[in-house]
Amino acid sequence: MQLGNKLRRARFENDELTQADLAAAVGVTRQTIISIEKGNYVPSVLLALKIARFLQKPFEELFFIMEDDGKIHSTPKQERNTP
Amino acid sequence: MNIKLFLLLIILLALLAYGLLPRTRLARRFKMNETLFYMMNIIGVLCGVVGLIVTLIWPHTILSHHYFELILLPAFLVFLFAAAVMNIQSPDAPYDEKQNHDMTTAAALSLPFSVGGMFLLYAMYKEGMIDGLMWFPVFIFLSLTVFSSATLYYYKHR
Image (cartoon, rainbow over all chains, first blue to last red; front, top):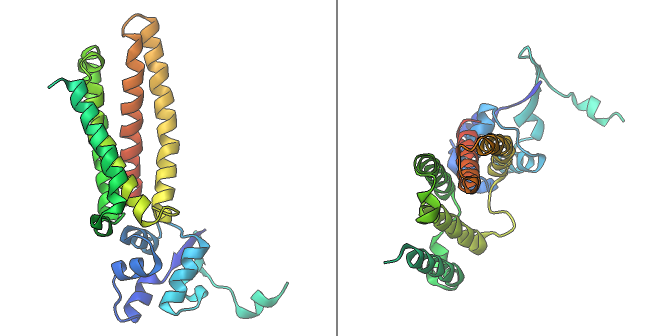
């Protein structure tokens, strides 16, 4: 199980934002953004939230859990509200 | 010029620059960025490798002729410069979270290497193969090499 992301697509949807621009906006280095996009580095919750806020996307749309068999595990909205 | 005097002069000048840099206009020009991070680690690897080679080839002269300090000098200067830049820019968080993560992993890796190296040196010393004082340069250069190279590797490839 690992963390997947749609960061690359979100950047392109955001006026083809470069990795360097995104990195500068959220206060990290370009290499950190590259590693997150490749799935090599799992960002902290704070950084992931900063990225989602800057790209104006819901957190769940950018980051998701990927099962070992490649299936994407999405969290339905009604599940989130149950205790 | 005497090598001891030269080293002392350089270190004093570097410490003076460290103290004065934040007060000058030049301070705004320097940033703790990826280039400086790479430079620190590349110089760390170079000094470490050169130091290890020289220590293994000329174990006695490296300490008696102060080559040990001379080889470490570039690493010391670049680390001091980075420390000055960090001091000016953002003392709370000089590195980003991945850099911190990579350096922590590299430090954890350099510990068993250093301990292993010390065990090997101890065994060689007990057999009378090497001088007892050699542990210090080997420990410093080995730790520097493993730490800097592992940091570079993790930063670039993970």
